[in-house]
Length: 252
Image 1 (spheres, rainbow, N blue to C red):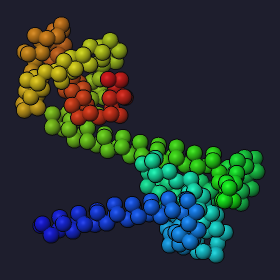
Image 2 (image 1 turned 135 degrees about the vertical axis):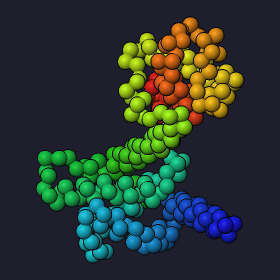
Image 3 (image 1 turned 60 degrees about the horizontal axis):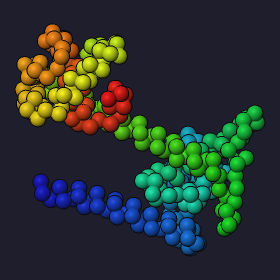
């Protein structure tokens, strides 16, 4: 068991170190190391071919025009990559290659009524072909993808947490108050509960609302609390677990 754990840890550490080494190589290539740039272009040809074949939905080799397009895009990604964006270079370069290939395919299909992204190309001092519009769009798409993934993870975690209280997401949708004032009132009740250590402990331990204690602190009837019991609990779960996206959705 311990050896298996250490093995997994070692693999994870290797991935981190590999990413760090790649970042260092990218930085060196950006600052003028032509030899290292060419080495990266050669070393990552299998990756470039894989992405190209995926976009083209067919097998592609290094003699195809599409491969040349992707190779140029990969080189662009080296120049445009910003480590401060907290995104891996391979993820970013994949987006740049995909956009470049899609543009190429569109032109091959003679979609002349569409303005190609290459219209906005410029060249830097080292004569590397750059496309600021394309690069910016790649970052936007990457960030949107990351946001979607985080939102999915958060929703799954929320569903799991709700199940501990016998609440399903579908049920929550059905019992949600329709009126803004009613929701605001329940938000306030949930907020009071979250800020009270004893009531929050009661909820976590017994998986039930401390209705008697709540009635001493809120100006609503027992019937209102009981009728909206599950919704109040659902709001508390969001706040306690700091579900960022769900907070935003519920306007907490």
